[in-house]
Length: 243
Image 1 (tube, rainbow, N blue to C red):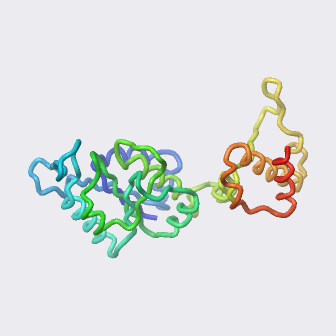
Image 2 (spheres, rainbow, N blue to C red; image 1 turned 180 degrees about the vertical axis):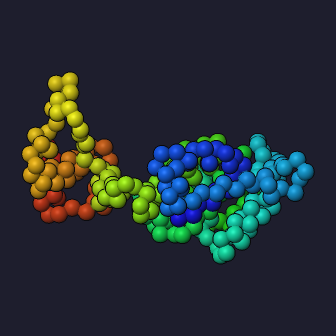
């Protein structure tokens, strides 16, 4: 997977994604990241990329020219078109299903806006996906892009030491992950559930599934209509709902 991030603050992206799991994945060649400075494509001698909005209003708007030329340069480097994801609170809300979809791509281009946004004309020309990470407004698109890159990269084969981790976690089968425990067996009077110490794998798996269902009901009941449950698990859920 190759990521290209069009931004006014390339160092923010590069510094934020060079450590831990993603840093190791880059050093191993499993993913690559290139932060492209939109200012490098300005035709203004001072590197300005913004101007006042037509029609008046507060703030500044990023000009279409530098953004367009930055996109063109990346597409020329790739050798073909790629999905261009514009980070905006007006977009489709990012979720695990979208991450799985995007993880199938070979390249992704992220466009990070600032100020009051980007001239609509270049968005119409270049953007394939408008994506939001939530119903709130940030100072720019860099943090949302980094969130998406982190999430998508976990689904790239080899990025996680244990490839099962990408599947058996929150939102697998549209359920939240079950509780996790490690040593010591007792902490501040609270013991690890006995079933996890039993060595009985079938019982452990059943307990984990039931805990996932219970936790989803408590914390994210909106996920349950699309959860993949067996008949027995649906009976268990019905029992929880009836109290």
